[in-house]
Image (tube, rainbow, N blue to C red; front, side, top):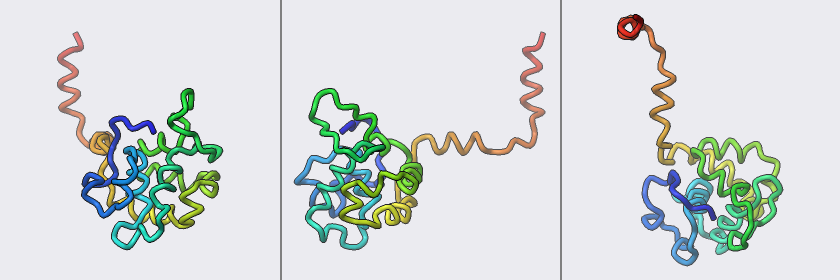
Length: 157
């Protein structure tokens, strides 16, 4: 797994959720993001014992071909994995998942065919991406530019 400093989708750390598989498997931050968004933590998401393994294996799959790329093998291009996409804001990851032809080949889809729909319904529960505030400020319409023009005029000499 890539597991660097990434935005955590869950508002709380993984250890504060009823995620039995998390303690047994050392899931990276990317796999935890996938687990949080794809599994229904309000219901009973862990009725299947293979949920944790499928989440981890899916995060390790090539995002184009669906091939499993062992993260412990030297020379693997981990930037091409599903895990690398889990660094995106949750809504962008789900946009990818809804449109990627490879989804049907991923282990999580084989186990839980409707996980992408679950993920779409859970996007609003995810933590905000750190740049969301900056992007929103850039999108605000500026009605009055007179102060900016006056300030800039001081430097036009």
